[in-house]
Length: 333
Image (cartoon, rainbow, N blue to C red):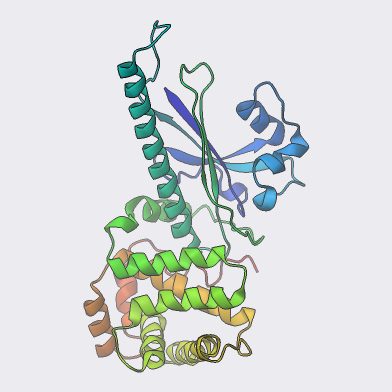
């Protein structure tokens, strides 16, 4: 039995067509009419209705083409054979097999969501496929229709991925499995991903800052200093850049404290959120690869001066994407 995945993909262009998110899932582009033919061969759905079917918040319905994550997965057949009145034993066996397939599909969906999050670490846009549609192919004895995922607010900022970046981005996505990483990195990555679910900028700031604290806070009393110095030493390529990161992190932490302790967002603006997200992306990009124990990271930052730790980290990051295509400069501006 074959199950087909079709998941509409937001904020990409032709540069990513053919890109393999996993060994079984790649990016394709279809005309709207062709998508309807694939999903609904009897064409009960009109092209203008595809937005309702596929949660149009992430589709560019002005375009005739839609980018899609596509894959085909093979599972053991589920059928009743020639039996007109199947026994309870056969029905129970079919039920167990279908549940096993559902569990596998949800695992596939989870892996895809993880890879989308990892891709976001490299580009200044929200590349995402929040809804995944799994359907058995035509002619199957057993019909399966599963939709996984959740609604996300998608900001319209298209990621253009230069062709020379694709091999290294693909290598990173294929080699990294968050379930195998240190727990503090899993927590930070989860907060980072969840920040995209929020519409209230105050909650976005808090979730991003919780991700930062999960990485750098070792239970010290002066959290503002610890995370500001940690981020500036980790990311600063020079003394001047480290000082600027330290200054910005202190400002962002004051905005966080205003929300938490004073119930005020007077120091919060979109620029601070973008700065914090940019720093966090770069930070996670390195640390997820390095996968250091938190104590090792803390000791290394404590013993390093401005501009020192970043150079060491760069030498241990094999993807040649330290700055290229990163959240620092990939917005297309």
